[in-house]
Image 1 (cartoon, rainbow, N blue to C red):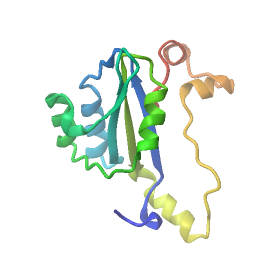
Image 2 (cartoon, rainbow, N blue to C red; image 1 turned 60 degrees about the vertical axis):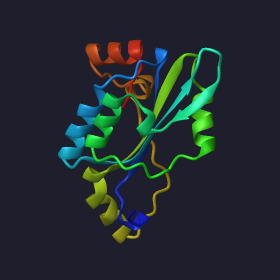
Image 3 (tube, rainbow, N blue to C red; image 1 turned 180 degrees about the horizontal axis):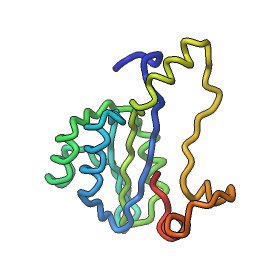
Length: 157
């Protein structure tokens, strides 16, 4: 993996899937971003909590073949960025009968400006991604349709 001084900003996202209904729509959406050079997937893993509350990590190779193939076609390489404590913490937040995807990606679109900031002697003091729900809480008007969707279903951005 490249050194930190060569990376664009990196984001981590944990998305829960009630009822463990992980579907294949995510793969094509990620593929579009990868093919456009917008992001690079650095790691992906899955956790689950069964109906009795037992938790387990699920490796990509143990996923449903269609889901696994979708991620493999993206060129995803599992770099092991998540440790056992990360997986246990994510699984502990799940409702019984649910699963979650843990995803880390580099924002390639921001790599050049990140490097320019480093070259200028800049040091990141904080970096936080905001969801649509955060923006609504701050009083930002996202438009009726986007606001209703963000508050009704939760935002995944």
